Length: 267
Image 1 (cartoon, rainbow, N blue to C red):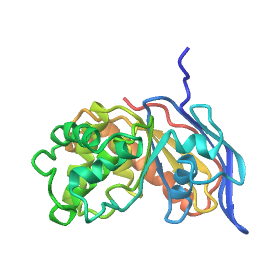
Image 2 (image 1 turned 180 degrees about the vertical axis):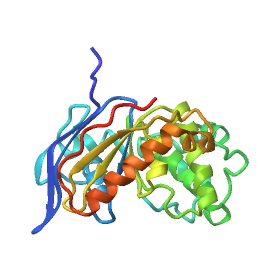
Image 3 (image 1 turned 30 degrees about the horizontal axis):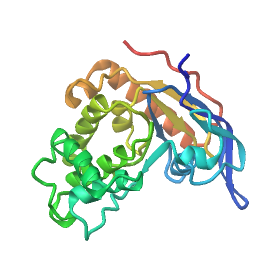
């Protein structure tokens, strides 16, 4: 029987010295599910993502990816995309994307061929030989996402991937990412400070309190990522879910720590 849980956090707490950042995080993520994390600045969203990605172990509780609780096991199953694209300026776009399969042991020719197939599919055809400095911000983020995807890992951890983009480009990239996830389905944890973005891209949204972070609410998205973004985010169900999420976020930021009942799926 196929495992119904891809990522699991049980009572996860984490401290940096005397500073408690995460405080009893509990959640399960099913295979193929997209789960968004939003919360006040500095609450520990990125810390949680990095721990899931195997960059360390929590100081309390337990977490596992595909049943592996150890950091090395999680690292081998989660591909992390940080806020900055981190493209290497001396490599062409295709070679930046091909770094992931190269790290898996593919030859340069094999890695380029694997990356080349996705360049055309994700709107980067013709820019394979471009230097990163010649690409727009949105195109750089696409290359960075392809590099993350080409790591070949079942779980993607996306840390505010569009935070540095202007509003128009950001909206375009949200719709692009929705399409990319539809064609290359993975289990995804998405950190964002933008409630609308997270709600549009996710199946459900976890609202975190101010530091030390706890889950204070869960909101299920009524939107289908197959819909055009403008149509999805202006629907009555989406508007209602967004207001609920914003109210929970404001309550959590004020330190109102009692968990809010899970919201049923919206029509």
